[in-house]
Amino acid sequence: MKRRTKDEDFDSKIDVLRTRIKDSDDLDVHDAVFDKRTLMDLYSLASKGVIDALGGSVCTGKEANIFRAKAGEKELALKIYRISTSNFRVMQDYLHGDPRFGNVKGTKRAIVVAWTKKEFRNLTRAEEVGVPVPHPIAMKENILVMDLIGEGENVAPPLKDVVLDTEEARRIFEKIVEYISVLYNRGKLVHADLSEFNILYDGGEPVIIDMGQSVTLDHPLARRFLERDIANVAHYFKKKYDVGSPEEIWEKLMRDREEMEKTDKKKAD
Image (cartoon, rainbow, N blue to C red; front, side, top):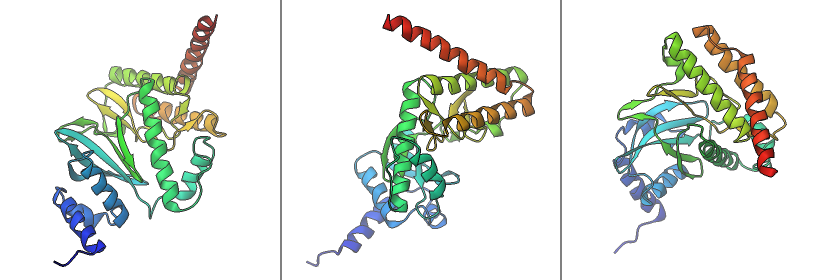
């Protein structure tokens, strides 16, 4: 009996994976995403039961593609960072100032893998302090597995695609301001790219996404990133709904910080 070569064995495994993809065009359209190593990592996740089936594309971002996936009846989002087309110089700026990942060097793949791990850890920290984010489930190399935000076939839209009345806009603005404060004061993180593009509107509630670039407060540019986040959010709500201001967000941050410091002091005493 003829033994299969490694390449034939690989092809066989990928054939199994391909049968699980609902939209087979994904592999042709997104060649930059599904290189040989990424396909093997996907197969590994499938063989471990992390994902049972792959679906079509949800969206394409600056650095990554997001696809539907399933584990049993649970809807998942599969975020795959592109090795060949990611902006490594920008990634390095965010990584090297972060003490958790400052020593990352080497190949493009090493940088992207560190970035994926960084997003997994940032999502985990945000969730731990009570900020609504996609629940991170697993990661392997440049692949991040998360809960899909939405219900059934309806993926939650980004805030930029939603039209709110003034009362609802005020409520959502205040929620987002609260999450900025909680992330900063309790999570010791700054999102660093917060805008209407990466806040989802899920069943009437905002959900923060895309946290690969989020940095700890000891990052040398953390303050600048925070200022930019606050300016982006305030500008969007002021321009579209005539609610909110940067001053309101800063006041919330500082007030919450003072209250937290008082609470910590009482506990220490």
